[in-house]
Length: 166
Image (cartoon, rainbow, N blue to C red; front, side, top):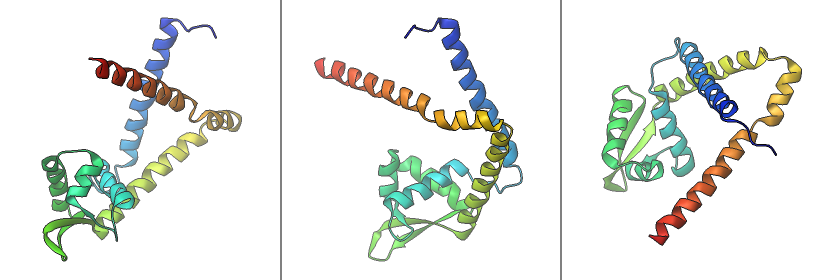
């Protein structure tokens, strides 16, 4: 396969940047009517509870380990979510030294509203693409991501090998 020239490759990178910027701008506008909920932090907590928690809760220490963040940083984020009434921290009834985190109804409701608004925005975006091109888009959905992931894995293995040889 012939290699692409630098201007063509730059155009792809520029396109991806514009797509990301415009997608974020549109999503932000779509969220204007939603409650402010530190969505990224809240979703991170909810997803981690779903993957690693039990009975809708997770230990703060397990949350920090799962998101690979230092405990003080996780505690600061949780404090913000707690102040906004989106999560609550409770003492583990079986071990009073441990703290559990669980979402509040307000947090779950805010998350649902944001997810709905973002989904509706991107549904409207997709409807602007002619059906035939939409089918092409869907058939190619993952090709670029798979290529990027494969390249990243190869680079990571190469860097790991270099670090082991030092």
